[in-house]
Image (cartoon, rainbow, N blue to C red):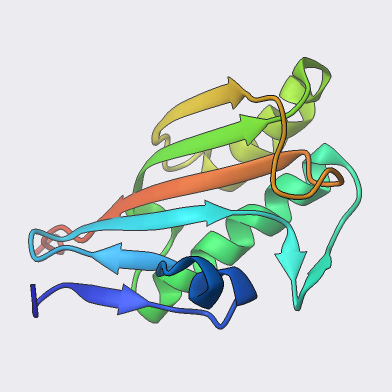
Length: 132
């Protein structure tokens, strides 16, 4: 699997749990691990909208290391801890992806790794051929 590219960001859980922030497969599919609103070891942004934007920005930074942007995103998953946050998380997703329109799922879960986190996101992107 030498032609698989891996991106690490130095987040403490990457080494502790043995994973990469993003992995690009030879066929151009890029899988970005779950991202939360943890920036420099601290939770950034308090509410669900802010946490969603911050979490997607973590994913975008990983994509940028592979030379990709949000226009390459083909699927998103949003894991939220409360149904009351659907509208705020959805609003953030629309603002970030309205022009891209990836396939998307929003799933309510019982909790995340830190109780102050209310959203975690996953992103899949595809490096297709550039239009002529």
